[in-house]
Length: 73
Image 1: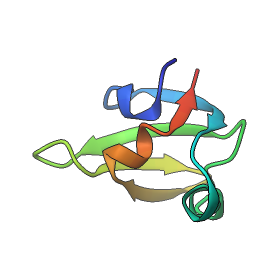
Image 2: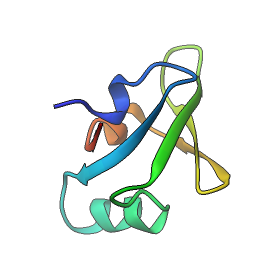
Image 3: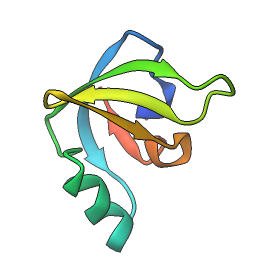
Image 4: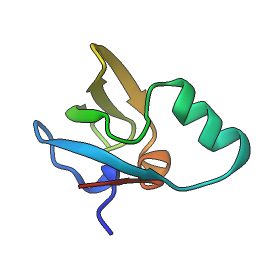
């Protein structure tokens, strides 16, 4: 299983599935991370956490632990 946390800088991936439950899953969906959306990793913070993503025409910062819960292809 490949996750969003495994994607290299300047690479894109498509969301396949959100793992997790309850409020965390709902929060990710509210931020636009839904099945089928194209996500590009723009850059990483100096220590690798958080990561900056581009999706649906806006930038989003996401912790690497949360990114590991998003399955991509």
